[in-house]
Length: 122
Image 1 (cartoon, rainbow, N blue to C red):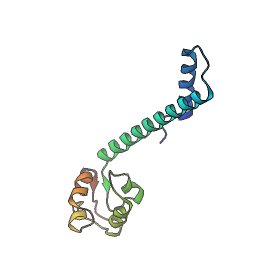
Image 2: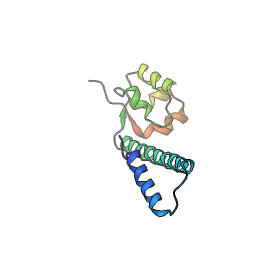
Image 3: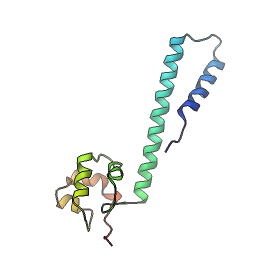
Image 4: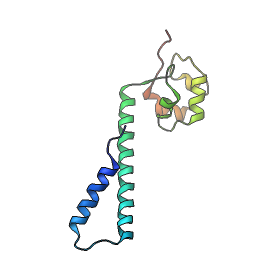
């Protein structure tokens, strides 16, 4: 999901910057300012996207029995090898089985427990 077009924001920042200065910046100064603005925009866009993803996962728990690897990797701190073990260990009747089956440590499970569910297979 793209929330902010970095190119559009960059053009806006450069326009505002050029209007507020009376002398033309050197090419190196312009490159530096452009790089700083781009880095800030990227960081902010990532933070917004992460916030949206985190809010969504809290409101809609992820079903361990049907989640894709990509969905599992969107959970905080979950590593690819852990996602693979979760998928290989299906089906689950309760999310805490990730701990009892030694797929995740209790510490890792506690970070994501409120975002998980185990719906019965039909």
